[in-house]
Length: 475
Picture (cartoon, rainbow, N blue to C red):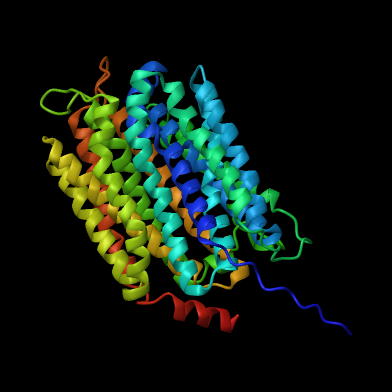
């Protein structure tokens, strides 16, 4: 009987890591251009606040569907191979968004761009295969931080480009950067060997049912402001949503290769991390949606009447904080454990949101609040991803981190749509300006939820490594 000796993986050099970081920056920039220009897009495309919220989160919804599939394909066929193909889809989406003449076409572009969310677990797969443990943690933190940091570029450039050229160019410029960085990654990054058997197929029934869950959830949140006048429609959506969830759980439990491994999700360290990530990202998304709207409006005693460029500059400190949060979160997770980092993030998030619900009459109130929200989100997500990515078997890296990232985009989607529903419900009849109470309610709800999240955070282990390894040993 002969044994096959596998060659050791090729080490990833610094140029390859740098190229991966540049790709993260460019995709982060493309992801963030909508946020500071959303009021402008709503006016140019004649969108309601609820439609604006849908545009703001449709990319995240697509990411929730693509991410687990991308992670599984990356584990199976190789991270680099799937990453390059995924970025081709993202590039196509960016071009569609750049050329979009109306809202439906722009939504199609954003749906295609959502594939970028799946790039993160693929990057983690490649990094873990080509770098030792310590260096891979640092690289994961770097890539996560650079992706978040790319939002700074988008926030700064989107407003000036949209005002001086047009809204079309604010999508075209970062798309060109994505294309260039993808070619660079393809050239510099070593190929990684497939890590799994090719026998099991993709869980298409699970993917379709999860799509139904997300679409129904978004529709339900969209009609929430009119639930009183359309009770039958709202009730029917709740019944359909429950049916989709029940069917999805049944399919995933029986699937030989489920899209989302419910057994892995059932582990305390995983589901608790998902709950915390969902809540933190819900609060972040509400803040990300409500703050630009508050800066744009000019109501009676509230709002600032700011343009896209001014909004981008006001949001800049938050983007800088988010950039720093990536590496700081990774370092903090290694030194103090995920519980300490996430507790700090949850307290910071709750304080910032509750403070914004009480005081938001000065620009510095908005700047400080948004900065704390961005910092808290970056610390929490990075600590959770880094902890989970380094705790599971190498072959499960894509699936495990996908669970956290899917939770991230689900929290973002629900938070964004909830913010849009609150503003729609809070807009007086015959007016285009939401009442100040709608903003107060949004910040207050998100702050209370973030505070309640501490009940779960306190049950987290000081280190996620020990319980995960124990779970692996028991299984």
